[in-house]
Amino acid sequence: MKKIVLPGDEMYDKPVRANHTYVEGGRTFSKVLGIYNEEKDELVPLEGAWHPRVGNSIVGIVASVDRSTSSIELRHSSYGILINDRMSRYSPRKGDIVESVVKSIERKSVPVMDRVRPIDGPPLLIYVKPAKVPRLLGRNDSMVKQIEELTDTRIVAGLNGFVAVSGRGINMAVASIRKIESEAHTYGLTDRIREMLISMKNDS
Amino acid sequence: MASKINKPKLMHNGKRLDGRMPDELRKIRIEAGVLKNANGSAYLEWGKNRIIAAIYGPRDVVPKHFADPNAAIIKCRYSMAPFSSLEEHGRAGQNRRAIEISKVIKEVFENAVILEEFPNSEIDIFLEVLQSDGSTRAACINAAAVALASAGIPMKDMVYGVSVGKVDGEICVDVDMIEDNYSEADMPMAISHRDNRILLLQMDGEMDSSEIRKGFDMAVAAGEKIKSLQREALLQMYKGV
Image (tube, rainbow over all chains, first blue to last red; front, top):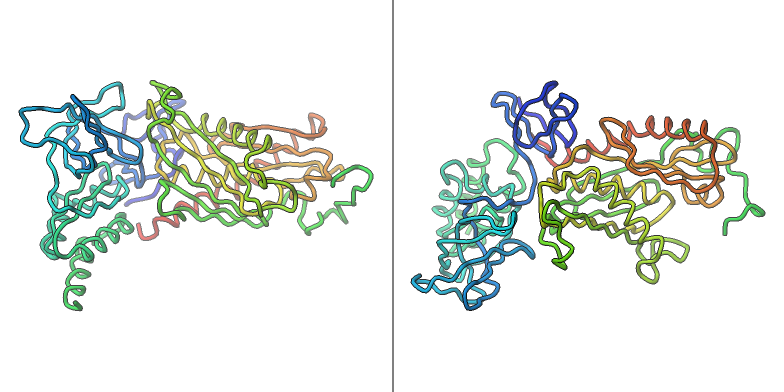
């Protein structure tokens, strides 16, 4: 049984340490708009901004290149830092669309990037709400692999919300990504996306 | 303009000019998630008020020296469209009134949003009044609360806004523009859903303590309807769960 909870809704009548909740007056309340799954006893936010965490894979745009560091735009007016490595095979150029991994977080909120690689293409860069990216990826990347297979594209989805799409069937891939974004909270989405892409292929 | 000399009679047979009872709200409609590019948004119709709220963030603070290394900051911009009112509102950009309302709404949400989760960040609340008919700050608070929740911003509680006024000696809830202009007093409030904490309380005019108490009770009673409409607006975004 799943139900939608709003900020301030009571989750437990006792203090419980659980994600996306807070305790006040000996009771536990939700602090986000989310879905509470009673069977799994977990609260999953339906919306939300991306918080950089060590190990997160991201897609970004190289915003500036200096002597020793480069900055990578990770979302609107938010940047990560890349310490330039002369031994690296890739030297960043302004405007490059890259995939990368968060290596550490400096000063509480500034992500330091590592393992930066350019995405070939040039790809089409679209923005998906960060809370929907895990649904776009699917369990063990099943959803994104399915789209790649059926549309003959390469999709790199960053947890920060940027998604780079390159290949032949970009329009079909983008349509399916937008459908996933709008219906992320519903059941049977993988099957519906497959059906949609197959019918689009047959029509074209 | 409003003055005591040309003040019309605002109550007739216990009913207000628009036919409402003293404890009756105007018709309200709230829709969440109306703007594609915003992180969260809401559109609200409250009587003849038309308001759009948009939330951006949490994002890096600009300019950087405003950043708080321990918590997010909230910026709020209340703005009336130049065509929103019969009066002078909004024709020359932000005026003193708009700056004041932006400030008080910002302070409402500073006490509702869990700011400690986003150090060095800012959360922007944009409120555009497309058409105004009194009690716009209360209406804006309702729209902003829905928009913040729809943006996934962590909050301790939802918030609703409602105004109370003293019209022809009678305490009335949700005063419209004519009542606002000619009333003896008006008192906008913002109240939290769960525990009725008062996050905003302003007053123009004069009311005694028993009238303020009665006004507060009426606001809380009317708030039940606003709460359910806010909840419904957010649930509508996720039909099919």
